[in-house]
Image 1 (cartoon, helix red, strand yellow):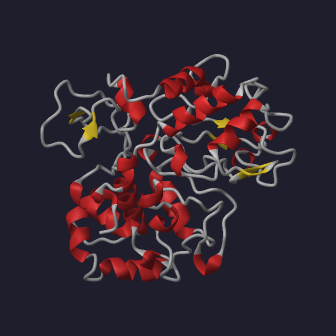
Image 2 (image 1 turned 90 degrees about the horizontal axis):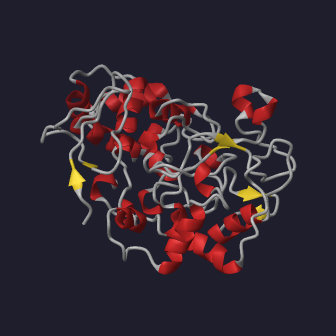
Length: 338
């Protein structure tokens, strides 16, 4: 079993204490950094409990059919696999692949185009979006004042003042507890040398090599640089990605680098789930895309170029990415529907 230690969850960039207290919440893997949270939204057990109930409650949507968990399901590592895009109220469909929210509390920005700076903003965006939850805030406020939520709300916030901002704070607080850190790769890094096969170790060497430069974007604990890149998916981008936020032509077709943790569980791949050649359903297709150098585009990242990998090397890369799977995420009772 992995070594577990209690660490303090601090606000912003405050310094960590030398000795954390034994009653701190939540328990976090010792090899991960401290979890940041916005000023004014501390993490407490009561707020997490409220957030978990809200996360799974379809009554927050206008039709009473869509919850956060409808598109970010625990059994799919909090993604919407195998759907290319998610279905919202009245059968409306979005235009992008729903990203995983595992370890989302560590992300600097939310959504593929980075238009939200916090999990609270992301939750509110989905809550109000007409093609997602399309929430009736008056009806939701009535629900939160009802017997179904009154005691949980009081425990979480210390009063009965209901607001949509507070509801989203509770959901975001629950999401910050969804942390993956026990893949075979993690265990290998903690000294279990047999946790990875020879093929997976070969793939790891390729992944972190200057030859593939995979880790230059997919680096760090969560295998993401939290930056935006055009990786040569299309000759023309109907979804213009980061450009939609900044209006900067240099951001045309750029999307935020996703985490690779549990990537084997979240097909299809890429922001829109597809590329010039069709749906990206397998990691083998993803590796082929990068090995071929992607589709030409004026601002395609220069690191996306022909790699010349042989079939055994491509297979090793895929094997390594599959070793980033932490199946405990799928069954942790603290993250299941209450």
